[in-house]
Length: 63
Image 1: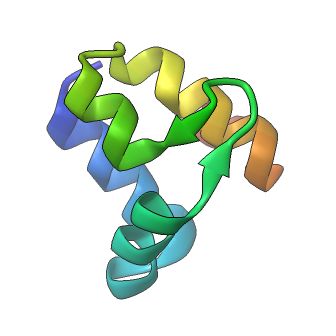
Image 2 (image 1 turned 45 degrees about the horizontal axis):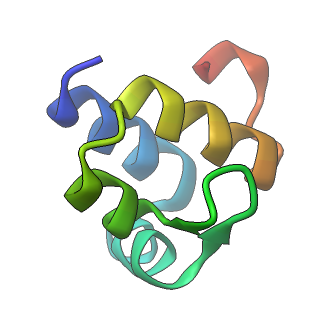
C-alpha cells in the first residue's frame, strides 16, 4: 500500500485533523510504537494499517 493510500484511509476513519494526532499519539500494541514512529522505522504501511484496524476497530470494508 502506498503511503498516500494509507493516509487517505486514516483520514476516512479519523478525519483530517484527528488522523494526524492519532498517528502521533496512539501506541499500537501490535507494533510497540505509534503510526508516525512505525513509518519512520520503515515498517510497511500495510502492516501499520492492519495494526490501526485492530486497535481502532475499523470496519472491515476499509481494510
